[in-house]
Image (tube, rainbow, N blue to C red; front, side):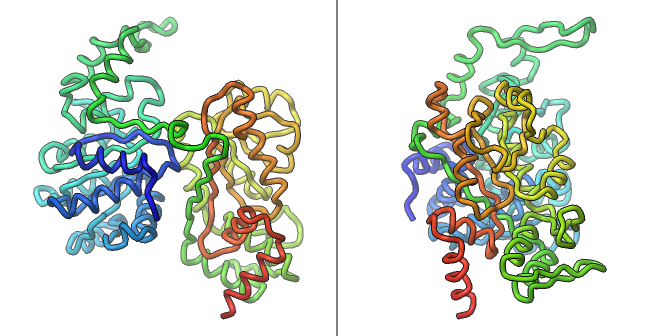
Length: 459
């Protein structure tokens, strides 16, 4: 396994700059580059143990998976230190090299450890969650992190793909954790007065917004150039091809049992209901449904039982990291659509109304849910965005390629957009989701993929 040249650039920047920010899009491998830097630094100085603060699913699954997956990081131990107070206390007795926790538990962690804070290095994955910090306010998580950030932490790394989604004002709170206000001002008020003007919004005299002065962006960029490294995908990747990213979504134990029963016995017990697959084709469909999170209880498509919400949590992380950039979501089952609309009130289902497509292309829809069959030939969706997520997997190679093409690289270029297309797949490991991915990668017949998989499982 070889790192890309830009990943080496990320690692070098982290090693050379004890308190720094990496601004790189999802799918660029910034977590692996960060781990590589930590592994290398460990040979030269005391950087362990490390604390990684991230959204829950990312802290619980993504970072441990990254550490275990790559040969250059497998020597590092990693564990999630969330859970109950008792579980955290037990974890503190024997910390791993890399310790992960979700943002929501950060205040409790700081209180529980107190002066015994052990983490020499802190990595903040999705640092925009610190943007609201002020010396006398901001989010609770940011205020508690501020108690240890400059007194007990030697190295700090901020990771995000979108450092200023709502404008330059998002930067002050994040950068304070790196330099305590040395570059952008000791307080947010000072930052505001130097680079912004206030403008009243509407009749309410207290309703105001900050407008950046003409020289603000250039001067702020110069101030941050030594500690912030920006990795632009289009400078390092072939934007003539989509940037494909596979996000592993492990099943909870109960959901895994349901899946395994269906795969092994063509039958699974759900509460008071039994779900049965009549043949191999039906079993394939039931397994796909379980991976997505809800399985139909009968032969129709009206009554389903929710099994888990892991893919919804994973999609939430992608939408949050997109920080306002529109996201197109491909789903397969009607149960997916219903659950997604409930989980994401801002989402809109693509329908036959031409105005829906117009609104998407105008940037008015933050999340659009589309079935690949209804978003096939002829539709142009590239104006609305460049991020596509496959929530559910589907055997149809034609449907898969067609919906990618709706926002694909060719359409982006034809419309004058110099940006890569990101295609994220939410995949349950060791499941039919992986078989579908194999089918899509190799373009082999469905039957061939299934036969080969069954051979492997019976050895």
